[in-house]
Image (cartoon, rainbow over all chains, first blue to last red; front, side, top):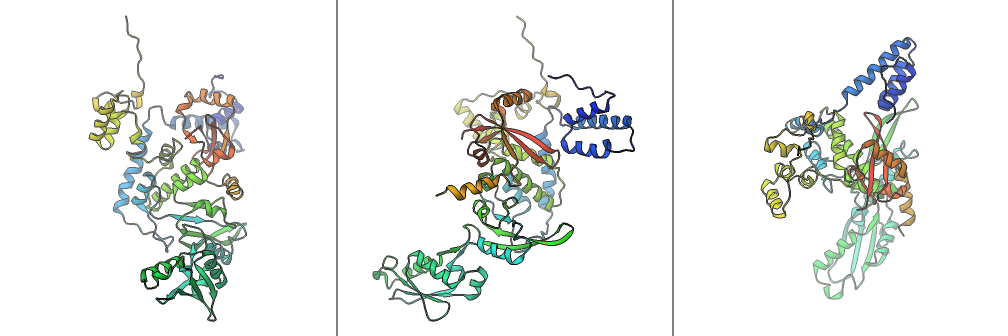
Amino acid sequence: MSKPLNIFTDNLEEIIEIARTILPPKKMEEIEEKVIKNEKLTDKQKLLIVRDAIIIYTRSLAHPGEPVGTVAAQSIGEPGTQMTLRTFHYAGVIEFDVTLGLPRLIEIVDARREPSTPIMTVYLDEKHRYDEEKAKEIARRLQYTTVGNVIDEVQYALGSNEFYVILDPEMLEDRGVTVEKVVEALKRSKLGEVEETDEPYVIRLLASERVLPPEYYFDPMAYKEVENKIKKVYLKGIKGIKRAVIQAEEKEVNGEKVKEYYIVTEGSNLAEVLRVRGVDHRRTTTNNIHEIAQVLGIEAARNAIINEIMKVLKDAGLDVDIRHVMLVADMMTFTGKIRQIGRLGIAGEKESVLARAVFEMTVKNLYDAAATGEIEDFRGVSEKSIIGQPPPVGTGVVVWLKTREK
Amino acid sequence: MPSRSKRRVSKKILEHELVPKHEVLSFEEAVEVLRKLGVPPSRLPAISVNDPVVQLIGAKPGDIIKITRKSPTAGEAVYYRIVVAF
């Protein structure tokens, strides 16, 4: 260890050095700006202020043995009870039905594979973000589009292999697809011979024998199947993105007020969307935390968990300190994978038999422990409480180790 | 051919605002960190070798990674994770 820090020094330089090693950078910046650079203060005053800052900061740190987990649970849980009772009207993305409030909170801490409403927020790069038309173009590029999305209907008659695909001009325009593109896609699908007819927006498809064998010529189900195959032919877009809607946000850039456009999508596919040209790969996110862990890593997932939980709490008008949420996120990502908070995750991986039994499925846990011959060490809080000994919390973490006299 | 397009995205993820800075510690630095924290490597938080960021910076199981997080409370916070093989 280096020499002990003397905070009662009379040297201003020295106390600033000490403060740098103890205080977090953000607080230090504030002190530097408001105190050290302040010309109205004497050196003596500065010294005292910095010293007080160090003392107050050190005092307000979590003490050894402080049950931070319990405090976090209470601090999120108590306001959470109000969330269920108060209905809250969400004024945001009107087009989408987004899971919010308690159900969403449970979804996050349970670490579900798929959120019940996967949503992506796709930001655009410099070139595209201030122009609604360009934003629309990218939205079209994202939206998963099949032939079924742009047609009016598929007509056919039993007894022949002729199918007429009747396109809907409005939908073509909306999705940004041309007739030629549809013809090309149908040709690529190898369902049969494709050709444009004399009538506009009508495409004829002669189903091949492989797709519709002659012996099925009078089976309506076979025709229905071919129709479905035609409708499923891929045109453009990214798999999983069901809908893409443009949103705008007022923003100030270089003192000027401008509208920034971004895209909100129903459905999520982060890896593919990040690859699309025109998408801002720095800010684009999804609400699917497992997907973030897979594409951006576990640290990004930790940040995503914090953001998502804070968003839910803020939307409900609850003021929960972010430190509690950070602790939850740290615990959930401790092993490098996302663990849920519950019997299949953090609580279920506890070493102690009794601690697990206290949480959920008491009898099952005790049976299993007995069958496999587990040993209880009585070291944790729950176990000690059960047998009536002081739990290792607060001053209880200090134990006296005494060698037995012989 | 997963090579080119995949690699391009891979580099990009390091610039994402959700991804903090990851650095592999040298052996000496790692020993120093463990001594300062007073824990064996097995007690450190883990990160998988298959984690995209770990693969990009080329860390191997057993390496300790220094993560410099942007924290809304402290400005900057340092965290350590050990690379595990699973």
